[in-house]
Length: 76
Image (cartoon, rainbow, N blue to C red; front, top):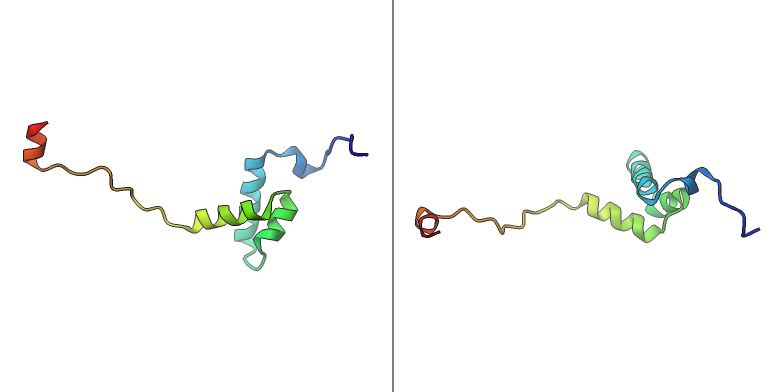
């Protein structure tokens, strides 16, 4: 039996698509948790939780690009 190919709808989708659908499911159903979405779409619960946290976390600018003063610009 283990030699059979899994032909379920979820198994035919790539990982990125399943993750996107799991996140969409969670945002459309806020009463559900990440474990439920992971089970529905065949993903690891921790992966879905991490994706939710990363998506909710605001991105901060890194601050490596500085505006130079005129003296600094002239020295370059």
